[in-house]
Length: 153
Image 1 (tube, rainbow, N blue to C red):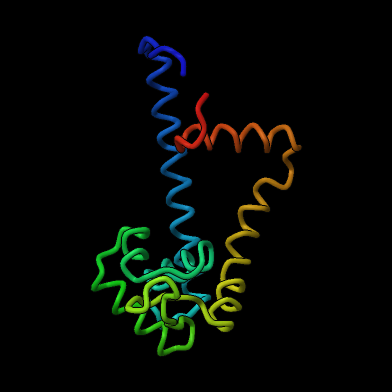
Image 2: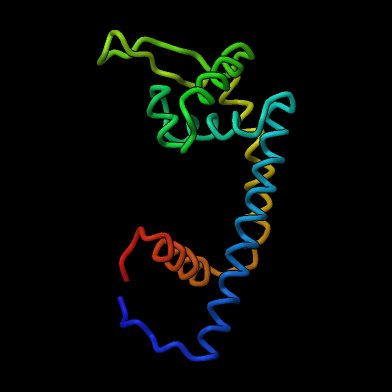
C-alpha cells in the first residue's frame, strides 16, 4: 500500500465525495434488497430473505453458523428459519458429520423463489454497467476488491 497521503483540502474534498458515493451505493443496495425480499415473499421480513440469500450463496449450514455469518442473534435466526421452513423454503437435515447437528438448506421452492427475487436486483446493477468496456469493469472490480480488503495493492 502507498504511504499515508498528506491531507490537503483537495484530498479531504475527494474523501468526502467518496464517502457520499459509498453511502449512495449502500442505500441503493439496501433498497434493492428490500424489494428483492418483497418479491421473494411479501409476508416475510426482509431479514428472512437475508438468511435465504446466504443459504443460496454458500449452501447448507447450521443455524449457529448462519447466525454468525449474517451477524444476527440466534433467537432471531431460529424464529425466521421456523417461518421459512413452514412456508416450504428451507429444510432441515441431519448433519452427516455430527449426528446431533442439523443442517439448514434451501428447498427447490426456496431455490426457485430466490432466483426469481434476485433477477430484478441483478438486472438493475447490470443495467448500470452495460455501457462499460471490459477494461473499465476490470478496473472497477479490482478497486472494489482492494477497498473491501480482499486484495492488497
